[in-house]
Length: 540
Image 1 (cartoon, rainbow, N blue to C red):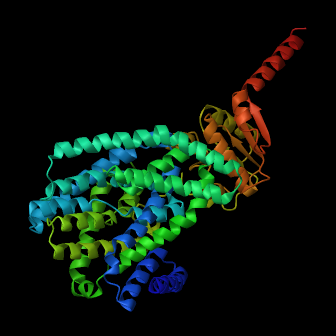
Image 2 (image 1 turned 60 degrees about the vertical axis):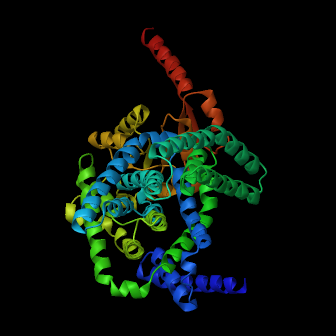
């Protein structure tokens, strides 16, 4: 126990010093955590600990909490709008990358068919931990390429399940047919999703409401931890990954009014555990083997980066512009952490050679170390190559904007609002989370940006503190409420004007300090009477 505490204190000290240095150099903290793990292993001769199942489990919960926060961003309604990114782009990316990697492994590197398919499946996956951490911290997750990358990563996490089933079938220990295994998996998936969304949704809503009404922060935090870990364990015991259960739990909470508070409260746990995950990754590095095979490792990494980028770019270019396609492809060009699990299972089943596994693990770690260096420079690189800027997500022009009106939503009412603002010659900008609406606004000559107005980072980018008014024209009451909550949290004195269409909607917003609530039906009645009076005066 004493030794463990010493290791923890030393690890904290090393990571603090290393990350402070990297921060000054403008480099990612992920690299600092990986370096910390490597230093710890060689300083205290803890090479066996680097493969400790218990330590890996603690680290894996960093990914669990990361996936939970991603689930908070993606409600069922939003997931429905991301079908193309998740199930379309994701399926094609994993399928095509696996196919190309298999032929390369089998015919170019002369691996046997079984080894080639396992390596190909592992290399088709990207790093959820590295990429989503960057996208969330940089707010790039709200851009078109961020949405594409997120959708593909979600599908990849789901794809881990059938991949592990296939590896289990390929091992000599598999004593059931693959059809029986797939059948059991489908039944389990139905049970997991059904229970979590039907029963779990009611339990989660009640639990959060009860704990929030108690006004005890510790009770609310305990409830959130219970939900995340409980959903993760339930999914795991049903044969799925921990992170998938956490992702579904996040989606359930995204449907409630508590999801913003949950996201802010859970952040410290996610960051600490995610840091632990990267420390464990650093502990797996065999420096001597890395030095001896550095030429092979770098060559394999470059090969993987090129062919994954090329495949993804060509795939996405069918539906998206060159800039978005290239940014997404580069962001997902590395190999992900779930490949560690795939290689470990394949190695224990004796269908992958141990020396090959050791080399491939180093390739994966090298790709995860290199990625933070270039992922932060993707925008600059792509702008130089493609020579275009995605104006709908570039908020730089708003830094000095003052006394402007922010119109949230460009549907029917939003369009009329901008027309009246044009007549008044009032400066305004449009913000909408729908790419279709933003494109339409741009075509109509409006200054419009793509983004979620309920996110603090977007509100900051819109310079909301210096805006003369914020007009919320959306139809969905849940979206209206979260935007109003975010606006008032960001700027308590905001001149917030909201459209409602019923007394029920007005009641749902009654507890918020909204400047003016415009009831559509009341306004129509008022206009009808005004027009009647004007007509009577006209014909007297």
